Image 1 (tube, helix red, strand yellow):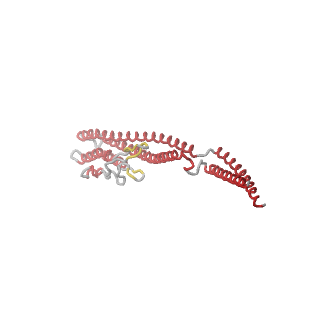
Image 2 (cartoon, helix red, strand yellow):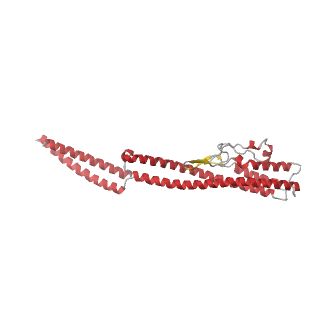
Image 3 (cartoon, rainbow, N blue to C red):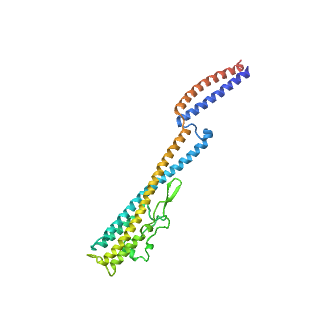
Length: 303
């Protein structure tokens, strides 16, 4: 009889401990909103959760990188448009019968173009290629271009353009080199200045036949330079569109992963509340039973 009573008491203690553990776990679910405090509590779903978390982290990293890239492409678009307008200014300056202010207009177009060519984004020169700390084009005036031993010496950009992630697993060239955009155009500025200082210059008043023939040739060259800038603008726009598509796709992927992780990790609050109430009742009942059994088991020693 004594052994049987002790066994019943032990059984009651085990029931009480089980009920207390259930109460603790359900309380934790209510307070944290999670099914378990760590991955060990998810059993064979832990591997799936780890995979989903990793995928979400990569997705979030791409989101941040793509935001920075989108901003740089926006600035790049503005700079290329400014260059395009400057080249148009140059073409209009050369399309004239009055050369009185021609060189002033040419210098203004030069300054507008080179200012855009040396545009910065977040402290880095966007047309410097992988060399972002040096001014891509060093001449400040057309006279500086004339004085250079070689126009190529005026460009300080690297030989490789900047790259960026247009898609999560796709790294492509997203920048342009100052030398590719402007080398031919700088040749035009140099030739105009040299002609103005030569035997058929300067441009002053009504243009002569020799001057008109020269300007006609250079207008054709300016149009070719304009097409070069337009090509860069088109490529930049294409990259912007591609990035927007990738961002939308990545946002959908992130939402799916977050929903998937939530489904695996988050507790059902209604179920957790019911479980908590049941656990509280079970603890009370188990405690009473254990208390009664403990008193019974002491009787043989009190006689």
